[in-house]
Length: 88
Image 1: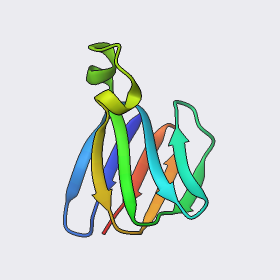
Image 2: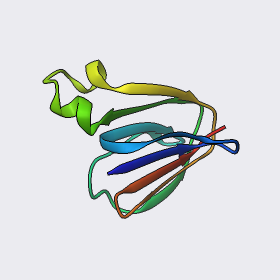
Image 3: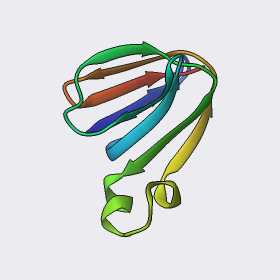
Protein backbone atom coordinates (compact mmCIF):
# COMPACT_ATOMS: atom_id res chain seq x y z
CA UNK A 1 0.00 0.00 0.00
CA UNK A 2 1.07 3.57 -0.53
CA UNK A 3 0.54 6.13 2.25
CA UNK A 4 0.58 9.85 1.53
CA UNK A 5 0.21 12.32 4.40
CA UNK A 6 -0.21 15.85 3.09
CA UNK A 7 -0.91 19.32 4.46
CA UNK A 8 -1.82 22.49 2.63
CA UNK A 9 1.86 23.46 2.54
CA UNK A 10 3.74 20.22 1.74
CA UNK A 11 3.81 16.44 1.59
CA UNK A 12 4.71 15.23 5.10
CA UNK A 13 5.20 11.55 4.26
CA UNK A 14 5.02 9.30 1.22
CA UNK A 15 5.99 5.65 1.28
CA UNK A 16 4.99 2.03 1.07
CA UNK A 17 3.45 0.67 4.25
CA UNK A 18 2.13 -2.59 5.66
CA UNK A 19 -0.67 -1.06 7.79
CA UNK A 20 -1.95 2.24 9.15
CA UNK A 21 -4.26 3.33 11.98
CA UNK A 22 -5.90 6.74 12.34
CA UNK A 23 -8.55 8.44 14.52
CA UNK A 24 -12.05 8.92 13.09
CA UNK A 25 -15.29 10.16 14.61
CA UNK A 26 -16.32 6.52 15.18
CA UNK A 27 -12.99 5.47 16.75
CA UNK A 28 -9.60 4.20 15.56
CA UNK A 29 -9.69 2.81 12.02
CA UNK A 30 -7.09 0.26 10.92
CA UNK A 31 -6.27 -0.19 7.25
CA UNK A 32 -4.59 -3.31 5.81
CA UNK A 33 -3.84 -4.08 2.13
CA UNK A 34 -6.87 -4.17 -0.18
CA UNK A 35 -9.18 -2.43 2.27
CA UNK A 36 -12.45 -1.25 0.72
CA UNK A 37 -12.48 2.30 -0.64
CA UNK A 38 -13.58 4.89 1.94
CA UNK A 39 -13.54 8.59 2.69
CA UNK A 40 -13.64 9.49 6.40
CA UNK A 41 -13.27 12.67 8.43
CA UNK A 42 -10.51 12.55 11.03
CA UNK A 43 -10.37 13.90 14.56
CA UNK A 44 -7.47 15.11 16.69
CA UNK A 45 -5.18 12.22 17.54
CA UNK A 46 -2.30 10.14 16.24
CA UNK A 47 -1.67 8.38 12.94
CA UNK A 48 0.38 5.19 13.35
CA UNK A 49 1.88 3.34 10.39
CA UNK A 50 4.43 0.62 9.70
CA UNK A 51 6.60 0.97 6.62
CA UNK A 52 7.45 -2.12 4.57
CA UNK A 53 11.13 -1.89 5.57
CA UNK A 54 10.31 -1.82 9.29
CA UNK A 55 7.86 -4.72 9.07
CA UNK A 56 10.40 -6.97 7.34
CA UNK A 57 13.23 -6.18 9.74
CA UNK A 58 11.49 -6.99 13.02
CA UNK A 59 9.18 -9.46 14.73
CA UNK A 60 8.10 -6.85 17.29
CA UNK A 61 4.47 -5.85 17.84
CA UNK A 62 2.75 -3.12 15.79
CA UNK A 63 3.21 -0.50 18.52
CA UNK A 64 6.92 -1.33 18.89
CA UNK A 65 7.71 -0.68 15.24
CA UNK A 66 5.09 1.91 14.23
CA UNK A 67 5.95 5.48 13.32
CA UNK A 68 3.50 8.03 14.70
CA UNK A 69 2.39 11.52 13.76
CA UNK A 70 0.10 13.78 15.83
CA UNK A 71 -2.64 15.42 13.76
CA UNK A 72 -5.51 17.85 14.00
CA UNK A 73 -8.78 17.02 12.27
CA UNK A 74 -9.11 16.65 8.53
CA UNK A 75 -9.78 13.82 6.04
CA UNK A 76 -8.61 10.35 5.00
CA UNK A 77 -9.27 8.65 1.68
CA UNK A 78 -8.54 5.01 0.85
CA UNK A 79 -8.75 4.14 -2.84
CA UNK A 80 -7.21 1.19 -4.68
CA UNK A 81 -4.53 0.53 -2.03
CA UNK A 82 -3.53 4.21 -1.85
CA UNK A 83 -4.21 5.99 1.42
CA UNK A 84 -4.18 9.78 1.30
CA UNK A 85 -4.48 11.63 4.60
CA UNK A 86 -4.91 15.40 4.49
CA UNK A 87 -4.02 16.93 7.86
CA UNK A 88 -3.80 20.32 9.48
